[in-house]
Image (cartoon, helix red, strand yellow):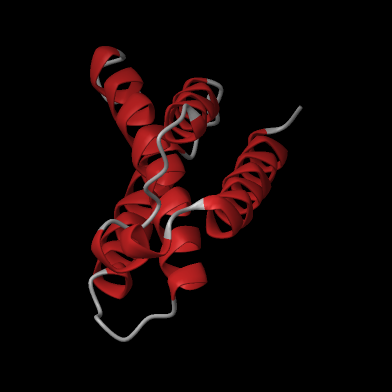
Amino acid sequence: MTPKLIFVAGLLFAVLCAVFVSALAPVAAWTTVPGFVGNILPWLVGGAGILAGLLNTSRKTKTALFTLIGLVVALTAILTQPFNPAWLSHVLFFVRVFFAHALLSTAVLYFLNDGH
């Protein structure tokens, strides 16, 4: 599977988890903790992000790093807006978890390979 397909599959997994959480999360948690759910879904999405980052072995790793940094910063900025609907906050939370963990593992590999 190519790195792009892995990222798309992880992104779809994050959105599906957000839809699942939006339907099951208590109403009180919607406004206080986006993406909150008392189960393993955030851990699974984060693990999928780490796996996607580890499998990103293309020569364009530096470009991927800057792209992921931009995505995580943008998703965080949008998530902190107080007027987002609950479903959007859940989607942003899970997508940010996926991309942040992919960024983490990609950056570690880039660091360990001396920037190559």
